[in-house]
Image (cartoon, rainbow, N blue to C red; front, side):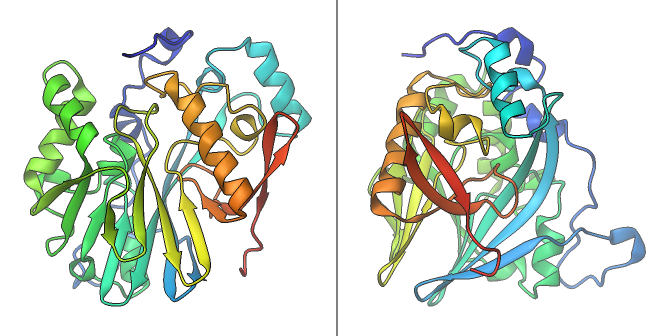
Length: 310
């Protein structure tokens, strides 16, 4: 059952797939064998670190500013403003990054989400010397356009040699809602254009050491992941946490794109697990590179960014 959320009317113009469409136009990705030109400039923001024997690279694809009404849709706007002011953060909008993860482990190169389709992902991969053809698997966390938009822009698969893994409960939602939901229709079209699409469920190990974790609420089939290598762990929470202050201090607050109030319960569970297991956490919309530790703080949590060299 979907629980109605308050203040959703303020966000009506930013549909589930419309986030990507609303972004400023970035340099378009060129094919991997096309040399860059001045007109093909990309902002390269990439951060590489180790998780045990795996190499993980955070790639910033894009950024945009959401209205303040996107934060804490179930509380008074004054409470949100007061919290942001106490952290010295902007109150006239919510600057938001869009980042994806590239994981290299053994013979696998796994891309976790694909960005907007019009951002810096492809150009940054090329600058790093990683061809799209080298990606062996694409793991999509959920159907929103800033996560699936780069899968098959223009109907052409961006990662032609990759198996595409999509959440089974999210696929069921797309099948039911595609005719009535623009975002669902666009996501379904992207999946139909991709090759070798497989569904996955909670607990599935997509590649050795990379396991799906149910994180429903933001969307009906939204997924998180845990990357484990040796003793090291990285929790990838996708859109379960979308602000560096608000949703750690107040996991019960809702995000304007959360489709169900279950998102708050999911958020608290994931943050509690990250804090108790003392693992690093990555969230797609945190300020780049979005990696850090979670600690319990009163009735909520706090986020401490990892040292950039870590």
